[in-house]
Image (tube, rainbow, N blue to C red; front, side, top):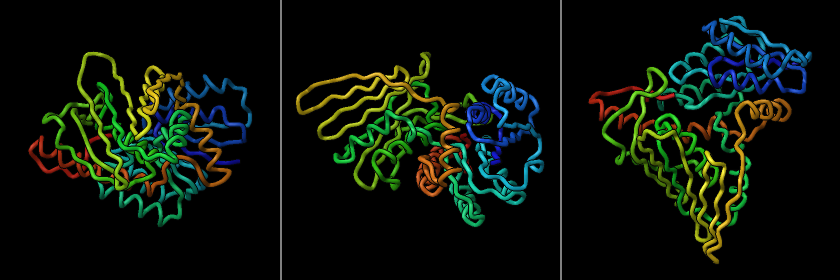
Length: 326
């Protein structure tokens, strides 16, 4: 029986757990969180899906990392980013882990990214970061469309979409669609004010971030403040196509510039609770999955973290050692 450990039973951790309630193979799941209330909620979400019918699954809920099984086939660290490196260090020191998934933002500084990468490699662990848009069918289809046609630009526009915390998701999507992880980034058009995040203890920014990948694909991320609900659109342009992805409405609009024909198709986005079990199955059976590897994820994280750290420090008027985002 395979051993799965989920460390962090908050919103994302409990969604991972819900997904494992649908796992078809025998599985021992251990969930760790020092917050007893979070464990209760996670157990309820698991039971809602599993409903006592899956006798091949067992789930235990623990408050201490030390109480995990010694050998872990797959660990998912779904804590907030500010404690993730500490949790990783303790996990590697105490347990033998084969495979690892880290939630994003994976870490809060270049130094943390590099320390984590060295630790993971030194322990012989295969690791990925959970930037799941690479798994969405709508983006898989767009990836195929641009195999033989170069993207010229990609832009994200929207309101209240949590720019500081969520830009890594879109930078990873850009890297996936453009087949490149090396890029330059400019935060000069961000607003000179910092907001409190909806997550206590973390910060948010507004305005515009621009940049370009080494293969010439230009990108832009824009977020404005509004009283309206959060929304976001992704605009992808090439010589022959203008494409808009509206995730909230589930609409993909493609304009063929050669004949000016526009088509709009509907799509649905998978929930995290429907993805984790499939990703875990791929990892446990083949040692591979479609998420970005820790190496690629670190390459994408570092330029962004450095640029954002500089901007936040400049606005706050002090030197900061890490980006207070998660």
